[in-house]
Image (cartoon, rainbow, N blue to C red; front, side, top):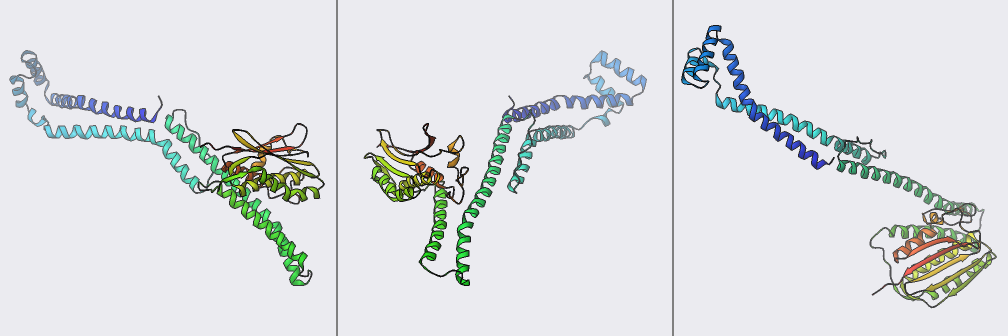
Length: 379
C-alpha cells in the first residue's frame, strides 16, 4: 500500500540491507584488491612459482606465507583497525546517501505543503498544486484536507467582505438621514419639533436594531449563548405578537389572525417572541394586503408555531437561501421596503439555540409558510 508508514519502513529495510551487504562483501573485496596488486608487483617467474606453491600446499599454508613475506608481502598487509575504520566509513557514506534520498522522496510533498501553508498564512488563497499519483495515502489525505481548508478560508474571506459591505450599506441609510436632518437643523432648513425628533429617533432605532441583530448572530457561534428558559404558554406569546403587529398589517390592507391552542413549553420567551415577530413582520412586509395566519399547535413530541400568508410566496425555488445573512428576495425585498436581511437568520439562530428547526415552504394554494418546530425536552 502507498502509505507513509510503509515508505519509511521500506527505507529502513533498504538501509539495513545495504549495511549488511557492505559488511559482507567489502572486506573480501578489499583483500582481493590487495592480493591482485601484490601479484602484479611480482615478476612472471615469481607469480608462476607462487601459483605452483599454492596449488601443492594450499592458499593458507606456512610455505605460501613464507614465500609472500620473502617477496615483500609485508608492505601489502592491511592493518585491521584501518580496514575496519574504512569499512565503517564506506558503510556510513552509502547508508547516509540512501537515507538522504529516501527522506527527500518522503518529505518533498510535505515540504511543498508547508511552503504553501506559509503563503496561505500570508494571505494567499490559491489551492496547492496537485500531487503525483505516487504520493502516500496520508499525504494525499493531508493535501485534500488542506485544499478544503484553503477553499473554506477563501469562502470565509468573501463572506466577510460581503457582510462588511452589507453592514456598511445598512448603516449608511439611517446615518445619511441623521446627518441630513442635523445639518438642516444647524442651517435653519429644519425646525426642532416633535416630528423631527421622532424622525431622528426612528433612525437611531434602526441602527440600534441592526447592532442588536449582529450581536445576536455573533452569539449563536459562541458555546455560552444563554437561553433563559421558563415554562411558558406559546399561545400567550403568539397573542402578544399578533396584538402588537395587527395595526401594521391592517395599515397595509391586510388581516392578521390567530389560531392558537394552549401549549406549555420551556422556552426563552423574549427570544422566541422576537423570532415569531420577525416571521410576522416578514409576512406583513413582503405580502402586503394578504391574510396572515399565525397558528400554534403541539403534539407529544414537539410544538409548532406557523406563520402563513396568502401573498406571492417565496421568490425562487429554494426559500432556505433567505436564512443566510443579508439575503433578500427580488422585487420588494429592497432597502426601501425590506429589512436588513437579517430577520430569518435571527429566527434560525434562536430556533437552533432551542434545539429546534426553522422550515420554510410554499403553500400549494399560494403564499409563503414559515414554521418553528420546537422539541419537547424529556427529563
